[in-house]
Image (tube, rainbow, N blue to C red; front, side):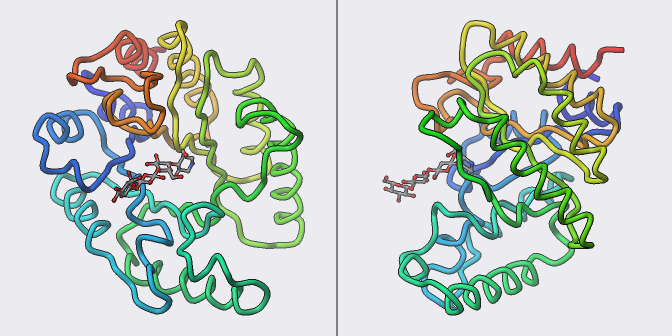
Length: 265
Ligand code: G3I
């Protein structure tokens, strides 16, 4: 293929990106979006603070703009995120116990019902496990991953429904050497795996992107990859330039290595 989405599709995968509703009026942005990507995750618009800013009053305007765009351009949607410890609305932050539990249940069922039939996959609980120890977000990943692994194993043993595990993958260089093996051990538990928020900083960025793509392609239950933004200027990692297009919308070396890896044997 000659685009990320088409090349991934030839391998039975999707290639997606995070989208901000406020940028859908930017033609440079939408030109790249609609040429390269066949899956969309709203970067912030489906989060709890955005969809239920006041308890029981739901607002879908910005999220619906993204869904409409996706439908008009044949792109699928990942829903993000029903529950997360960040970006909770203020009214929920002050709740606990059964009141919080019932607010969460109402939120999940109402938002999921609103988007019924329109979402390929939902991030139901985002970042269920905290980083262990005192390190930064990238330092204690394997420890946390094993915590999640044991949880999924336990869910499977007890018949608790779980379909998929997403791997955010906000990386600072090459993926860990056991990255593919880690995807595979989850797949071996009987869940699909997806790379849901990929961005990579550092001088070996192009190689790192290719390695992540190869790891996903080597795991048959890895359904696809989403990068967390389009141009470097769109990234939440200000100044780190972790994406596939530069701030002028030009393809970077990391784009080419990603495309080549998708088209590889
Ligand atoms: O929309 C308001 C704007 O009205 C206001 O003027 C401005 C002033 O700060 O803030 C704007 O909201 C910001 C929002 O992004 C939209 O730009 C929030 O402050 C800012 O906190 C928020 O950041 C998002 C972050 O999640 C929140 O934790 C990033 O865009 C988003 O990329 C990031 O994404 C998360 C994933 O959802 C989950 N995994 C980690 C990833 C990175 O943190």
